[in-house]
Image (cartoon, rainbow, N blue to C red; front, side, top):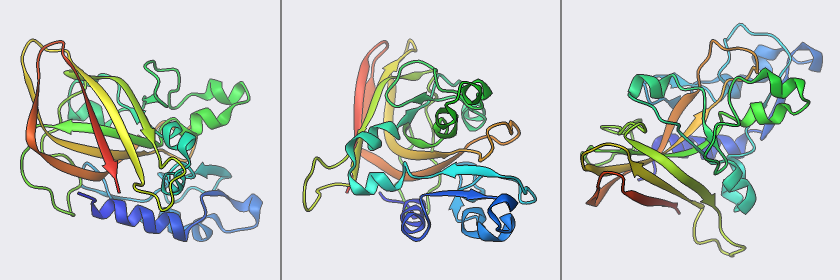
Length: 249
């Protein structure tokens, strides 16, 4: 089911520029020029409201925030859809999930892009750090309560220490007009436990990053966009690998 967060993000993408620079150096009052980016439209996984830019309200510095990876999903630009996918590393519980600052990025199975990572700035490639905590990822759970448009988290998230990500990718419409879908995400999971794990719910999140490269006080926020309860739960046996695909139309 497409959730309210998803609809708000679509509306935001069409109404606001995909990238911004802000601060006194631009001749704009930073706290007013970027009001749409600071307004708390979205409900986070931990049941709080957040804006698309995670920056303290009294900040007044020259920063850059790129949100272009999201709108390109709507246009079906194939390469950028896959570039905008991320995945969670092995996390033992929901607390670790909510405080996570490191992601597998763009279909990778290592942790080469991390946040914060000032060394990337020093090497002259700030975009790697900028995008390392902004992207779509799949999450699995064991809850079976029917979804509603107001959902903001899975009922019972399955830790990625138990079901770890083996591979993942995102794809858009292949030059189709009219397009048959917005995009699809496929993620492969491995059962790392000694017991069967039953997957009953599947979700898609976007992880919103902080705006400042060097501000380590702000963790990314997870915004649930899609939640579906499976008609036929999937049982994954120990050491078994299973793939899930979510198609957004």
